Image 1 (cartoon, rainbow, N blue to C red):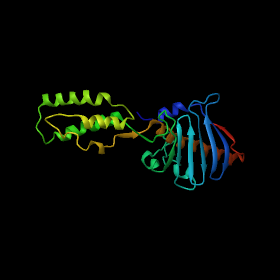
Image 2: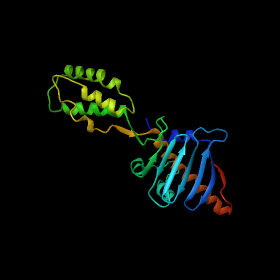
Image 3: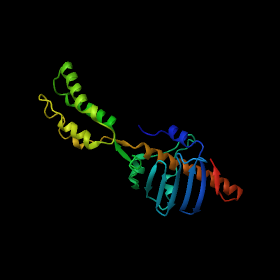
Image 4: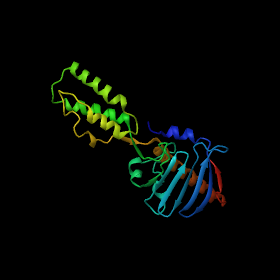
Amino acid sequence: MTCTQEQFERDIAEHQMTIHRDDGTDRHISFQKPGTSCYWFEILTWPGALCIRGDCGTYVFSRLMDMFEFFREKCKDPTKLYINPSYWCEKLQAVNCDGYGKGEARRFSSETFEARVRSHVDDYFETRAITDERRASLWYDIQRDVLDYVSDGDRSGAFLLLSRFEDPEFPHLFDDCWEWRCEEYDFHFIWNLYAIAWAIRQYDAARAVATVDDTPPDFHPV
């Protein structure tokens, strides 16, 4: 399961923005619902880096001198938040390790693993004769001995079970399975990407208002 824009927007529906520091590329901006720390987060930037930390983990990125320029969204639809998980993940420098699954960019996915197993078996028997009854029996064994024991995040356990699976008629069915990548972007990583895109949108809007009013954007409900 991954995070959607709709999920993220529900989580931050009552958040307010506080600008603690805004000096060129040196920024400290926090977002949270007043009276609660649920889904709070803050963004800190300094030359060449951006850190987002809060209730959904900590991630540090580096690419441009001003990282707001790097993350500033390219989507012209005001109802959509633009994120680019694969490219932005390449710029990830560090993540937190809090023991609760927050902080990883990609995690082993049992659903992706099962889909990869099924795809591999289908491809394997494209050029080999097998009856429907035999195929059903083989799938039953794979489900019972492997797939029923696979859990998210346990890559080594999943591939160990798969490598130990034996069928006397097809002994090489899962050779080289360790090379498979069965990952998906972590829910919290995607949540934080939406948070960065959304936060910069709020910041830019506040700066635009401050420029017109000629007043410093110290605090802005959003």
